[in-house]
Length: 105
Image 1: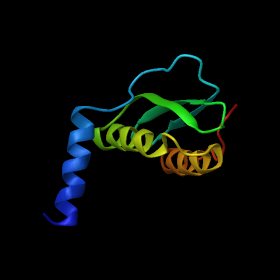
Image 2: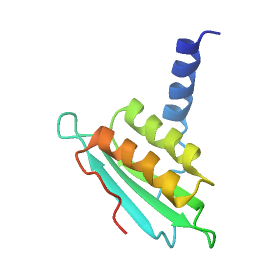
Image 3: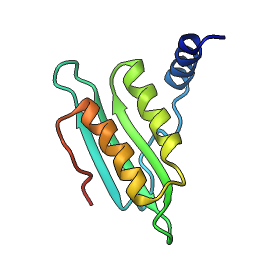
């Protein structure tokens, strides 16, 4: 299987069955992204553990399959990462869909 096909398969799978969908209880950080050009909207919720690593990361949103699949994939990538690394990944994702540059605490 080539890389392009693998990418498409991953996007399709996450688009059909998004991971970590919903608002997690007791989140400590959140970020919102809205793309006015297409109307995609994503709200990310993050909870850190006592070691300041990502314990829980969930999202809510409306938009195209690629937007929601991307949010789903991002939540899977960030789990277990340090707060600093998670912030960089989430900021990059939010900047991709909105002009906001920071996570709100």
